[in-house]
Length: 243
Length: 272
Image (cartoon, rainbow over all chains, first blue to last red; front, side, top):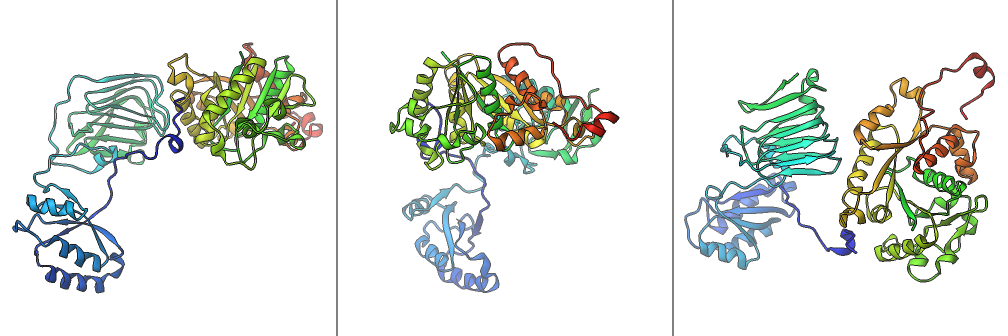
């Protein structure tokens, strides 16, 4: 019996998520100075300090050793919940882990993360480098139905059939739909700015190329029901009729 | 071996139980040994629609948990020969419905019946997935309305991936579209999606179209499946549906708006 019933068979599932997170950029390593400034902030906006999770960024500090434990204690005393540390030397990393905190590499050195959630690509990323799409693609035959997601992690995606409302098709390269496109189509999900979207009938809920997107509402109604191509021009999605 | 047919929709209130009752009754009236199973644990309705709510002693969960034998739980339909009902539990926790238990019940019933009709609960959770898991065929009940169409689309995706046939890479579950509560006059006026709109999006074979009819509500409240009311449009439409399920070619009716003539306006009264 392999019926997949989440509640019975598995205790959890891992999901990628992008959560809003406050970064506390430290410019001083002195816990007393931090305490004084926090006390002032709390009186200005008490609503903010409700066990708010924060990431302590120590990138601006030059000290190899930090009184991390005391800084955390000061934060907690002001109802801030340090959850992780960003940047710093190896000893800083070790003491973060010892305190049960996560550690992130410094921002500049971080390799460009591969977008896990398709909507993460919706943030404009002007610095995204065009990475040439490899030739391997994917051909999907049939209707992509509501709730289904068809992805070509490398290369182009070709759908021979309809993409229904509530369905999502994604490709590192271009997306081609030989049928009505009624759901969401995202091309160039790793930042390929040359990628395009092509379909026989446009009704898409969302079109996105390399993180730039247009919603159905933003699409010129004259282009609906038409065969179209979508390309990226000056960070804008350009939709033109193929008819 | 029985053919297992699930009646499902995703969305609630579209007419799953009404359809399951009418189709199971229709199959039995045509001489097929049929059992209809209510999978909606906690929101049991099928017994009411079938008019046997006063005869429920044991239910599906009692059988699965070994508290009653299958024959003790099966209720023989009073009006129709060859028809049995297996009710759901109204009080038990729906987690008690286990895949192994359901498989065993279906296997036993399979030896004796020609058709097993599973009335699925709404939604896409545990109960709905279990109702469809063992199916050979699926009747997807859809109203001509956008949210119902989208939910049916979602169910069709699950039928293609979360069923035993899909997991064993056997021939896929045969999908049928049943459109219910179709009102040609409201389609003509643009209030409702047209038959073609629905078929275009769902892209599966149409097995029946049931017109909006007062006979359906009357049948539900009386506990007599509407297919017994052969004077009504809905009764006839369900009978057509059963014929198509059995592989017959029957022309579609009740999908076009008939302007009422003077005489029927004077004497015809309401919709039947």
